Image 1 (spheres, rainbow, N blue to C red):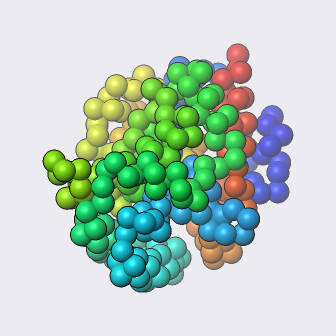
Image 2 (image 1 turned 30 degrees about the horizontal axis):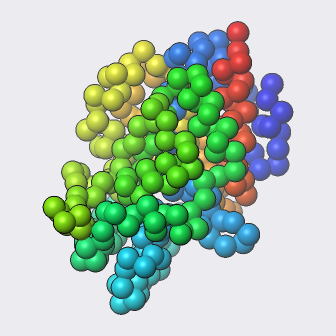
Length: 289
Ligand code: TMP
Ligand code: MG
């Protein structure tokens, strides 16, 4: 049905179910579809030319806006908490307080640096951030068919928006839930706004933003993209879901996590730095009827 699904990077526990869901979505048409995607390591690349690509946080961490001393501290946090984030031997219950700790400490350090709003665009431009190959086809297709895209990220909203703005794909059908910076009257970072979003509370984040899902209540079909098991709850605010197709990028600790990912996501992508699979599915759905 979709030749791209036969690529060696694609793993599915139940390919028949995947076909059935895509078929049902095609029949219902693009007017009933909404797309919900994580940002870091889902819309952005995990690696490029053998080098790891930055998350929203890393874009700031590696920038000239941060002192050398603070960079060391942020690196220590990354080295402590990232292995916990991807540890398949620990339960979500065990990881959750540690993730809150990571985000809280990292945000406190960023605030101490009094990052200037007017320099964000520059540091994003100078960074190694890269959207996945085929991102333009992904955003263009959604825009062309007026399919709403919710980018739901535990990263930093101001940075994320700048990445997609500079890539020329921050279209009106794109909405972002994320951690936004609060700047003082001089334009220096003083805090983060609202409730913290970390990788394991996206369900709560979704429920807090019920207005968005209320607006989209006629769209019962969901295409979800993520790279973390925490991303699976991003669609928990959707009104009476009819069909949901979950695509998961398995970027790191592949062997250890494959089984859990195959159970949780309908399609698991390994060593795939592109948006090709999502693009092929969207093309099939939108070309439909
Ligand atoms: P996401 O929800 O858009 O994927 O963003 C969350 C990612 O951000 C998660 O994989 C961990 C990463 N992260 C950092 O790289 N540095 C940090 O300081 C923090 C708090 C998170
Ligand atoms: Mg992610």
